[in-house]
Image (tube, rainbow, N blue to C red; front, side, top):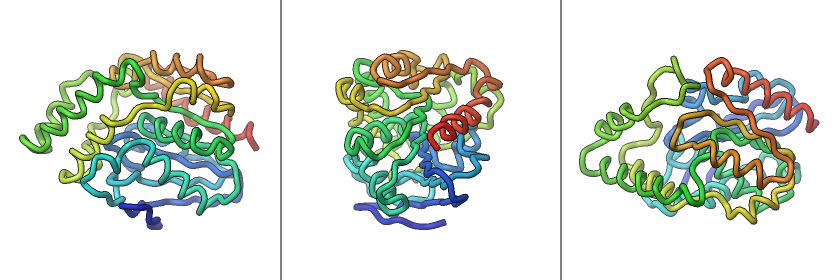
Length: 259
């Protein structure tokens, strides 16, 4: 494990070097490398013949952060990502993969540095544009809950939410964010959205979108809108755990096509 310093945080980084194509893997909101592995969202597992960079976003997992909501906006996370890529893969085009917040981070990074990515695998895209304000209000309310009632109340509220069918049988997990930082992380998410549709439409790289069903926080409508906007995008939808289990092989195939 390695620590990489960005403004306001030290990021915990893991690098697997098999002397192949560069790939960077991100994770979702309140998650981490470890938690995504438990949820079946570690698509890079078994990705041989690559140089695979994984890291915990600021304030998540083993990374540090500050209790400042603006630190946790997706454009800031995109800047963190680009700094990492400049250090590990200077001057190279990289394949990016990440779920939810990771998708938002990758899209903002691709807008900021259009030549940086060779391809994208966008996993369970989050609410965006018209559907974002309602989710932002939920994040702000959740932040208030953590501050007034504690982390256990936040976790209990999460248990009552329906789980997507593709996650049936997975173990229950808890947020991989320290209690004192969680409200700021949630408020940072409330301040965030995907780049504008016009900016997304200008991302001209092969893109695979992997979505699942029956999840208000990651609606199919966002995935379908991205497929319509992006010039070279495909959509795969998982309705069962067995279908979701195929996602790592889809990533492997997409990366192999870029070599």
